[in-house]
Length: 232
Image (cartoon, rainbow, N blue to C red):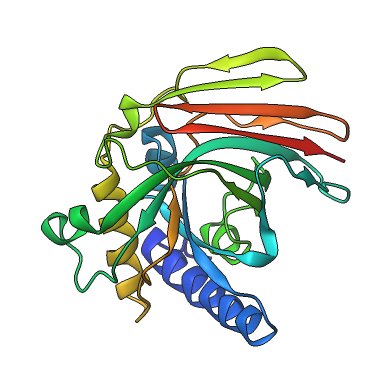
């Protein structure tokens, strides 16, 4: 069997993923934004990607700061510290000159994924919404909006103990406007737009940490803010 190119796998996976998003909306889910994943140099090289993968977020998987997250049934739950970009006005086209003024705020974010580290099929990864299970967006910050990811500092405490400081190894120094432009450009290829009020989570700033029932985690993304979550 001929190997499917990354471009073909991404197109098929995105078409199926966006169809699932529309079906979820028809059943009452409210879209809240988009997510990025597989954006480190190692992931881009491994999957022969030109940029991060894009997934979607809805209110059905959204949690409030300090909430208890139910992870029963997840095979390999992991927590990722991220940053959320808040979009103010619908982007009309994808370029940095348009994207930069559209970022109205940043916020700390946590994503809970059910990681399958052995999965190599890009289409299946996208259809599964890049392992997404839950998202938490913190208080908004309007300071230093268009910073590179490398300018952020991450610390994670698990059950009162420091388990991680600094950024995920190999993290790209992309600016927030670059991430927004990438999402806008990717979605434009599927006749989708980034609506005003949407949030875009950056992808993991930290190495994903395993979590289980009873765990309590505090995440700080400086200089943006902090979040806390409990697991059951």
